[in-house]
Image (cartoon, rainbow, N blue to C red):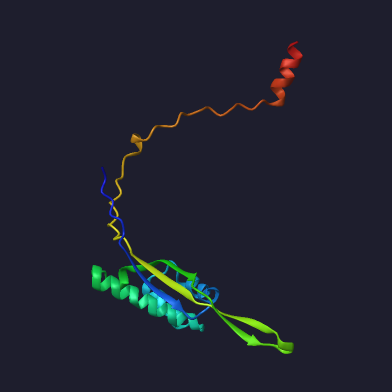
Length: 158
């Protein structure tokens, strides 16, 4: 039985964020699979309101990893970052001729899951084996070319 160490995962979630999930997903897509320092740099230069909220959730997940598991920030990467829809608040607005229009104030739940990068073992030194250890390839004689003179000799012999 082999012992394979599974990477530890840490999660942080912000619920009922007053933002459309569709708009927040655009930002979450940018940081998926990146290391934590790289994701922070991407969020710092993203000019969307969702970047600030996702940055708060990312900071919370990093704090959870350091406090609860002792994993340093530079060994973490974003395994999953997704945004689910929350409840929708419905409001009404008066329109012309006594009618109303529905206003949907959407909310979302932002989840960031961090995982620890596996420690890379140093590569084993390459063993150079002699070429004799490999199976030798059989040598074939090159096919003899038929010249026009041999074809003429056969024809004249008949």
